[in-house]
Length: 294
Ligand SMILES: Nc1ncnc2c1ncn2[C@@H]1O[C@H](COP(=O)(O)OP(=O)(O)O)[C@@H](O)[C@H]1O
Ligand SMILES: CC(C)(COP(=O)(O)O)[C@@H](O)C(=O)NCCC(=O)O
Ligand SMILES: [K+]
Image (cartoon, rainbow, N blue to C red; front, side, top):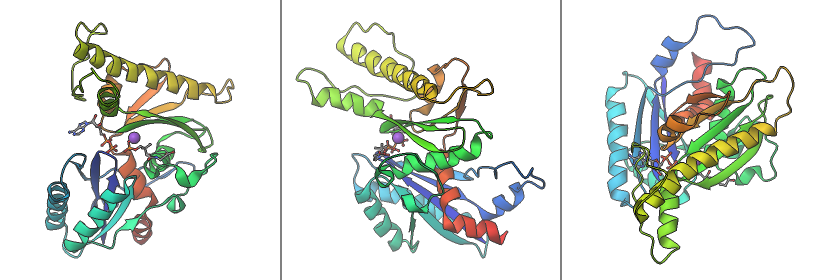
């Protein structure tokens, strides 16, 4: 049996998800309609390790601790395969070295070519693998002939469109809340950098100090931007009497904050914290060979 460790290297954090082979067997539905897409696998265990502004030693120790834990807990006779998707080459390099020293590997590094996805974009090789994996996973969640919009609120926020036939149509990229705060401090003489906490209470729209004003601008501005982009992307879809509004799927570190406020008229909202990890599972050749062997 083969367990799969999926690793998503973002610009702030390394996300790890363990998909146990045994759990995949138990969860396998007994009957499935032939037209239904296969269900999306979700990880049995997850961890997030911040690498941004930390030493490699520090964050690698946390990654190794998670890997050691899952190896200790694995059923006897199970092998651990590892698939990774990265938008940060130097962190990927450090991770590959670090895991090699732990006896894990070689890692399967997913590329745009590993994916089964139709895309109507000009430079597919330049699109972040995390965006593509999120839409690969979203394709398993949307109903037949339903469009989907994927909002991944990480270091950067991406708002991406899958049309009713499951074709990735591109989308929008904007700064995440932490980056917006950092940019205001770095690009001005007088503005301080404010801490953004995804669990924070909503700030008052009217700030009566500089800090409060920045807090309001970033918080409500980001929510407004995502709402506007979602509406604009929806409008690009050909409307017909049968068309339902697209499913909106939220993921990424700041997704809980967006989910609190993003009331989009007539839109179904769904939070999927492990969307990219599930996309890695779907795209991984190790996972598909595992599925075949079940
Ligand atoms: N415990 C946390 N540590 C760091 N960032 C967090 C945490 N919880 C939420 N966040 C938010 O999540 C964002 C990072 O989200 P994530 O999806 O992991 O990004 P990336 O894929 O770019 O690494 C940060 O910018 C921050 O706003
Ligand atoms: C847009 C991103 C920076 C998002 O990265 P993240 O916030 O997940 O760390 C990443 O997907 C990326 O580097 N993309 C390359 C350009 C593109 O997607 O078109
Ligand atoms: K993102």
